Image (tube, rainbow, N blue to C red; front, side, top):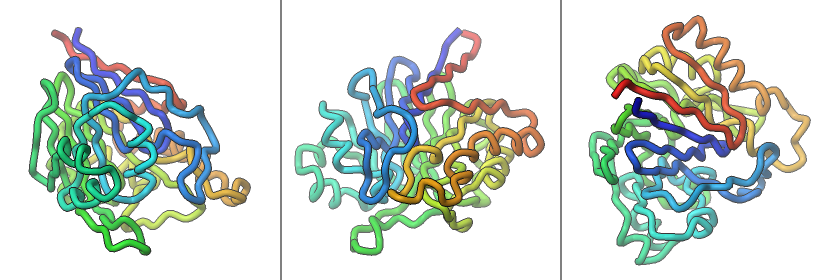
Length: 258
């Protein structure tokens, strides 16, 4: 039995191990991102330096410069098309030399894995204070399993083209008491995304980790409940899929017959 494993370290930070190759998604390894504080789960305790880091877009809670510096080593950085200039500015020319830019439909290889960029319906800018922009993307990783890391996204028609998948890492919430429906998924929209991509397994991410300082009691259900709500709604919307709600630092392994 060949296995693929994922470990969720909170928000969109996932360690993916497949075919002897390790990938890390949108790493946030600190207790703070600007005004956000880590309100649940331990600081990530990674097993080492990944072979590559997948960065879905430039928002600071996904493309976190301090965490990339903290990571160390020389992993390949796979970033959205247009982000290369920001890599130079934030991380220097050495990091830029091991950076690959991808737009939707582009692909590269990491070890024995094929990594393909796919569409994400999300703003690609660094933030309202910055002129840095790059297209927002998700990734489909193909090895022993076909895994979709959605990054941050709203629903889009082309999700159907990703099917079928073995595993979907689905964003189902956010980091604050409001969540725009156009460029994000809540639990219900996440279940609809799962129905479209026809994944055998799904893990909810992008919730239950960071929250604005001083707002711990404001709409706390939006911090606490999205994962379990996604699992409940998916029972109806995508009954052929298995949802596993992971605790911070917990892993899921899925297998295919050899």
